[in-house]
Image (cartoon, rainbow, N blue to C red; front, side, top):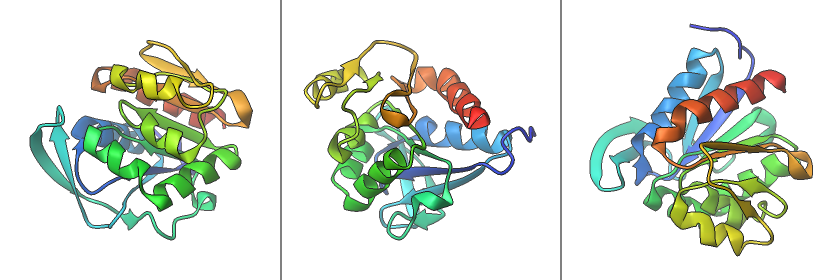
Length: 187
């Protein structure tokens, strides 16, 4: 196990169902493997049901916390996994929106993959950002206050005083995880 990210604290937020398995577990494992402390928080706390390709029920993961009551001051970075149902549920949750806005306002790293950028739209933080996502989210991002969408494995954007890292699909996870690790190391 590497210790390059010792002392760094990362928050991964999800709904309690509809999470794309690898988009939750791979960043969690990679960052823990680099020495970061990783907290997985869900809307309701407790069990979180993951899926493969949005349709095949997979493993259930027990979260560490509920979104309510969490503070940006406790963490260095925020990660938003995809999964269509997960992302659509998160984007409607007031605590998820509050956390995203607080991370952006505090100038802290936010990373989102696949459908995860939907939450960024509803939190009102995409203006002036260049990002990528699952292709079907492209139109929503372009319609959301001057966001620029690119088709890239990973896109890092430092505009507006905070860093955003985005990726398209589970296939991009190695580049996504590496970009998050490098950004945390530089912070």
